[in-house]
Length: 339
Length: 152
Image (cartoon, rainbow over all chains, first blue to last red; front, side):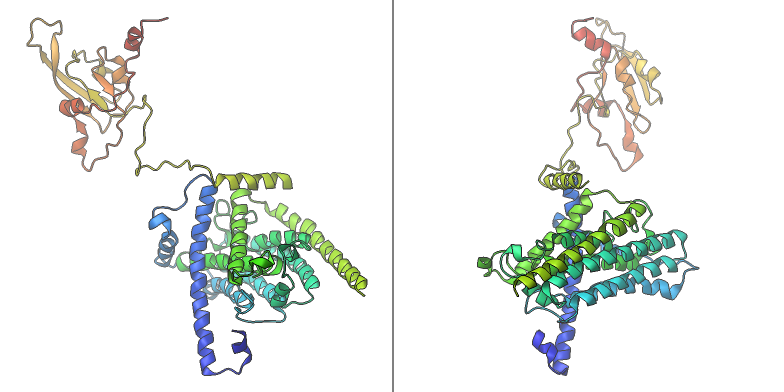
C-alpha cells in the first residue's frame, strides 16, 4: 500500500484507492454494527442479564433491525430550525471520525497514509467533530438542545487540551510524530510499550479520550436518561443514526489510536510470539481497549458537568503538564548519560 | 476514590461470569409459588349452595343456582345446578375461597388465560370442574386450623 502512495497517480492506482476506501468504509460500518451489539451484550452481562438474544440467533441481527428501524423513520425537521445547518451537522460530526482512520497504521504494511505529522493531524481532525455537535444543538432551535450542545462543546474543548498534551509526552519519547515511527520504537517485550514509561500520560490520555468520546462516565451531553439526548434531541431517523455512527466510529478510531500510541501497535508482547501476524495483535489490543471503554460505562455513574470541568482543568491538565516536564527531564538526562 | 473505582471495575468484571437473573419466560415455564392466586377450581360434589361466595365477591362475578338434592338420605339439602364465574371481572382476590365452608371453590396456580374472544372468559361449572391442575394447598384458613388439630 505504501509504495502505491509514492508513485505518480494513474487511473489504475486511483481505482485501487477508491475500491480500498469503499471496502474500508464497509468494514467500518460492519465493525460499528457489531460494536453496538457487543456493547449491549457486555453491558447486559455485567448487569446480570443476557442483552439482545431474540432477533436472529443470539441476537446478532439486533443492530441491523435497529438501523433498519431508524432508516425507515420519518425525517422530521423542526419548522423554525435552520435547515441547511440542521442537515449538515451530522455529516460534519461523522466525516472527521472516519477520515482519521486513514492515518492510523494497522500493521507496518497496512496503512492508508503515512503522514510525518500523524499525531498532529489526528488531533486537529478530532477537534472538528466538536463543530458538528455545536451546529446540531444550535440548528435544532430548541433551548435544551442548545444547552446540550454548549455543554458538549465545553467538555470536548476542555478535554482536548489534556489529550494533546499527554500525547506530546509520547512524541517526546519517540522523537517523531509519525505513527509508524512511534510504533517501531515500541518493539521488544511489552515493557517497551509506551504505557509503562509514560504511565501518567497513559492514564491522562485514556480519561481524556473517554471524555472526548462523550462516553460514560462523561456522557452528560448525551445523557440518555437525563437531558433527553442533549444536542441530538430533535434528530430522528437517519440523521440520528448518523450521530450514533459518528460516536461509534470515533470510539473505534480512539481505541486504535491508543493502541498505536501506548500499547505497541502491532508488536507482540514478547519477541518469541512474533510468528503470530501483527494484525492479530493489533486487533487484540484494540478489542481490549474497546472492552475497557464499555466496562467503564457499565461501572461508573455519570459525572456532573461542574465536576467534569474541574476534573479536566484542575486535575488532568496539571498532570499532563507535569508529565511533559518529567519526560523532558528524563529524556535530557538519558541523552546526557549516553553522551 | 481510585480504590472504590477499581473495586467497582472488579465487581462488574466478576458479574460477567455469574448466572443471569432474567426469567426465560415464555421459552421456559415459570413455577409459581403455591399460594399464588390463579383461576379458580370448582368441585360440584362439595358445594352446599350456601351462597357465601356470591355474597362476598367484591365484583359480583359469581352467580349460582341450586336444586333440591334428589338423594333423600344425605344431609345436604341443595346441590349445585349452575355455577357461572365471569372471569372478565374476577379480581382473583381469593375471598370466595376464604368463606367457602367446604372448600368447594379453591384457587389454582394457572394464570396463562389470555383468549381471543370474551366468550371464553365466561367460566361455567364444567370448565371450573375440569381445571384441576396446580391446586393451591391452603384455601379456607379456618378449615386449615381444623385440619391441623385446632392449635392455639
